[in-house]
Image (cartoon, rainbow, N blue to C red; front, side, top):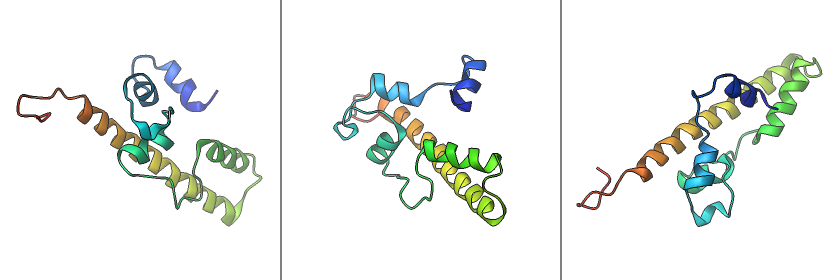
Length: 116
């Protein structure tokens, strides 16, 4: 179980899974039946993980674990730290952009045809 899952389970009611919201309430043909951030983010807002040295959660966890165990040290550890921060920044920024998109698409349509 990931750190995030453990943290969220210890703080019930304080977090909402955007993945669950997309899986259960949003359909887009570009999702191809999937609902992860790696699919929804580029489909809805155009952001991707291209150009990052670390592009997925499994790779991030593996690199972090190796660094914590002391298998990666010195300048290589500093490079991994920088890459992890860039990945986490993209994940966080992506979640914020997806949340904004969920809010935008869930607004009721007014008589003038807009959500305003």
